[in-house]
Image 1: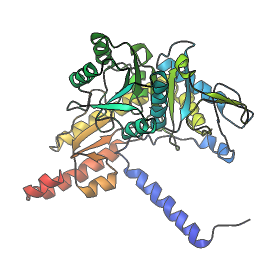
Image 2: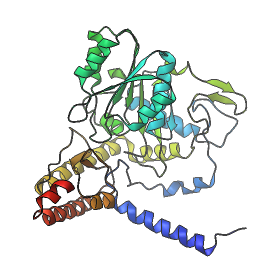
Image 3: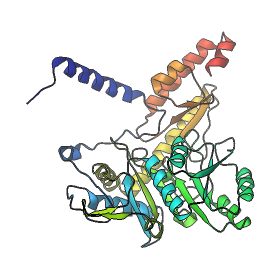
Image 4: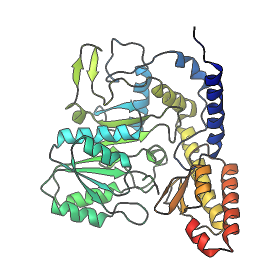
Length: 385
């Protein structure tokens, strides 16, 4: 058997050390890090593949389909999917879930126009191009939420066309949530007859539903499909997600494939069989009450972060019940060290599970030192924050 040579072994060891070290300074992206899946490590020796439809058995029997079905049922209940009229699968992440939701919408309304706000995740524009859909970008309010007056005006101009609505349940930079109640009211006021609402709930969907936060976005509020990420709030060593859709809509898609002995209804065909097991394990280990406590603890950390930043004179804020804390961008050096996302002069810390008070205290301390260092040079201060 071949072995790594010494140079490659050294390279790998150095990479592993660096990855472990960088994980200590990871507060700018919505990834939970407080997980322990060591009990599942033996499964990494197996090529688990959930090829095809999770509800239909396959001749490829080395899969985690039965656990995937339990994960789907958990989220179908959480998001109040219509009984006996829902379908879904575990995806590679929120972007794939968005693609699937838009794919279903396009099959229902081939001439439809997609409406999405300028704060929408970058994957949506890419997905729209892949599906060759027409689209209109809606302005956003200061907090990142959709501008409903602009939406009304745009819908009024195209009211004869089917509407495909992309609603954000937690935008990338400010974690703003679009209000399905307001969107539905505009539909009624304009007598929109053909519409489809997809909710990109990758960031906030799971804990918003657990805590029953406003505005509501589940199927009872008018959603036709919902996509979430699994590696964000729940946590996973492999990026993953989940999409749910009304079953009667999904049945317009898919065909039987003899080679795999099942139905091809997903985007990717071959699908990671390990991700559903991670999600299943976390849900079973924590339970619904444990997940609720997890959400409350993360929200408390976000509140602590705002107060801590405000205490050193930084104008930090967050949207109601958000884990994302927004503030003027610090120096490039600090952004790089703490891996902090920045856009248009605004940065954010996202207090996902696993972000600790010690990390926040250290970051704020370093930011305060930087600000104090700059007080004697006002112009530099302006350019750095």
